[in-house]
Image 1: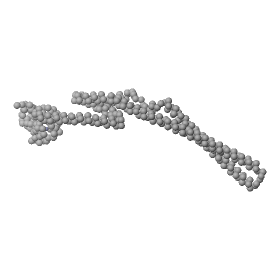
Image 2: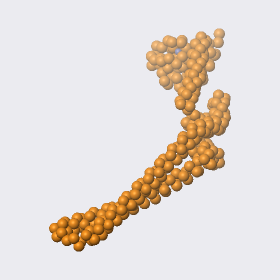
Image 3: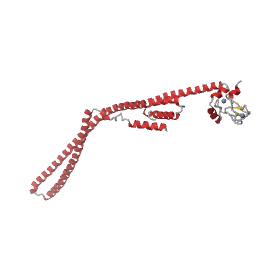
Image 4: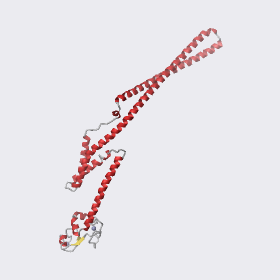
Length: 330
Ligand SMILES: [Zn+2]
Ligand SMILES: [Zn+2]
């Protein structure tokens, strides 16, 4: 409970801190004096292209109308010509001239409409190519800015990590000190609460922000942590085994003295020898000593001679205090 309240408080404090890092964008790494004209010329070129395209549509419609006019006029003229050939009326020559002239006029109109279409096509093409050119220029600038932005993000990542490290490392150091010195004190629940909080802050809130540099940092830190923790585990295991070995060489009474009453009872309830923690058959009534380390497991009451556990403080049959020292004293 203590740990969860501490974690909640820590989260609230962090949430209320002013946001120190501002969000970066591509524009921060581009020269606005160069980029702005390029952007506006892209916009101009786009507008010009759009205008040219709609003008082109209009010009095409006009050309189609002119073509249709010419085609219709030519058909009428051909029909008239055919009639004239049949009738052979020489007085119709001036009319022939007039009709030919009208047809030429229509043909001229059609040609003019075609020229207008071509001009608009040229305009649209120019605008499109200008836009492509300017876009390419802007793309190059953005590419260069992206490189700088990525570098800035790496620096930012490192800064955030160091900031978090500065907050969580002292907590972890305090937790380590508490673990070594105070974990068995009267206030151990608070001590353990703080240790859990510090471990949570360090491993859950810090480790995910470790800058990766393509995985190098993460793996190297993992290897170092494993070596340090593993070495500590090996050293403590060896120290424990050493202590066990020394303890087994002490006289029986002294060994029993050094074991706390509760530890001995816990180990006996698990059917292991309180001295060496190896399994023993406590139900076997002929076994008074541990066959592994030789510590006495059962003895006899000095008052009533009932067989009883050598670790119990009183005889269960007559209630006499079991004082080993008195018995063993010469
Ligand atoms: Zn033993
Ligand atoms: Zn007794």
